[in-house]
Length: 224
Image (tube, rainbow, N blue to C red):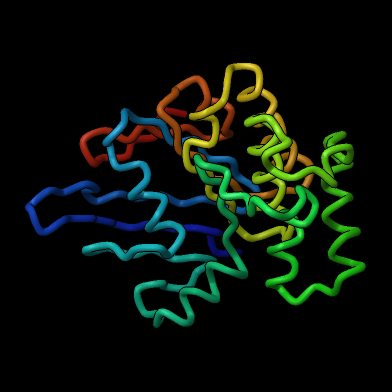
């Protein structure tokens, strides 16, 4: 039996001021799942995502990526795991301002050692998949917020990582652009089997996932 892509068991995150942000969180994410987690601002969603993405470590408990316990990793191994297995969609796009949309999407492929011609071909193929090839030569400042976030989402998924983490990806978008972005992420999930965990303040947006959880007062509960 294949291990879960992501597994959290008894995860706590506490801070020096005595706050317990996460309290014994358990979660298993299977390959190809789309997990939506919703909760109010300040409920610990971003903290949860940072632990999943090996950007932070739990106070206690276990975080495994593809069956490997991350608490035992040194920083170099954790960085390599992040680079090879995890893609991120941030709230703020984080596109490189002085290179084109296509070149932004190529960056993770370049970091993975993919050569120039193949890199460009794969990045352009994903733009074409969503009818966005017309944006390939544009700089980020020439794109709308919705277009920038779609480029950022494609960049996160272009290497076909084991796990994609999306941190409130629609927070700066209007309703129409948010819907288009969620459709893009869902298409990657359904057609390519991309495993996704998305956190949001919206129960409606979380419901796009095949599994839905609510995070409140540091506790994670499954709703569907």
